[in-house]
Amino acid sequence: MPTTPTLLDLSGRTALVTGAASGIGAACVERLVAAKASVYAVDRDEEGLSRFAGVGAVETLPVDLSDLDAVDALPGTVDVLVNNAGIQHVSPIHEFPVDTWDLIIRLMLTSPFRLTRRVLPHMYAQGWGRIVNVSSVHGLRASPYKAAYVSAKHGLEGLSKVTALEGAEHGVTSNCVNPAYVRTPLVEKQILDQARSHGITEDEVVSRVMLEPVAVKRLVEAEEVAELVAFLCGGAADSVSGSSFSMDGGWTAH
Image 1 (cartoon, rainbow, N blue to C red):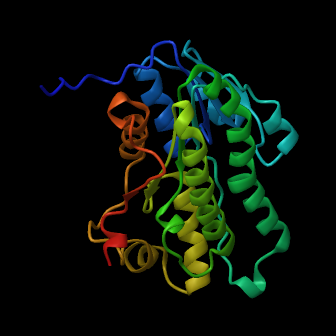
Image 2: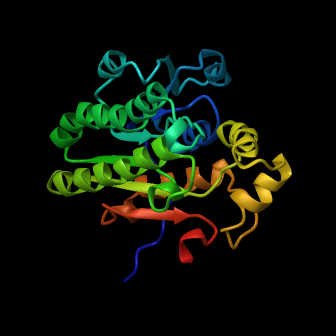
Image 3: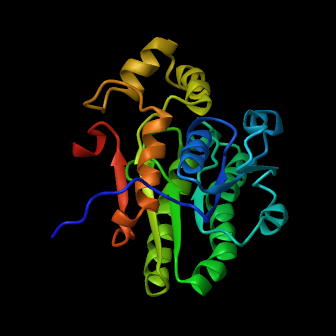
């Protein structure tokens, strides 16, 4: 007889969300708190983290995740890890600054690896854990002028799958969520950068670049991504691991 679906209840669980000061990260913090989890909200933007002031279930940790020593000092007794932090740089490969490449790979691939490595022993010891990697449609497809971002997201996809294979016997799942362009400060900054790179107006960036490959002609909302993250943390997703969930309005259907 089928069981009755239940609301997500993460009472007694602790989550860590990176890039938590705004956008997808902030929406994930709010959704996990609504599910009664305690949450470490991690971001270099200390002022942005102040949005959680007075929320008893949230401990804010102002940390620059490109500082790997600081990453290794973050809490390890975490039941749910949401690797979300990211930055973008738009430039042709032959002009792409080497230091920016190194920063993006360190922040968006090496840092998630270090965090995953840190929290897995606790998850293994208790026989339960959830790792959700906020990837992108660019973890599945490429676009011009985004060499470091696309490379980092493709690497994150591989890390997530390896984690899923190793974690399965310990009750740990690992998945990616892959949205198209989400209405966040990161995307708003991209609009100007893309306009410069493509030599078009900002309005044309949205219609001709961001939404051109998408069947559903709108930006994704951060709260939609947070709901998918929440699903992957719940009991209905116990057998879901090593997967990548497109939330791309039909982009990858081409």
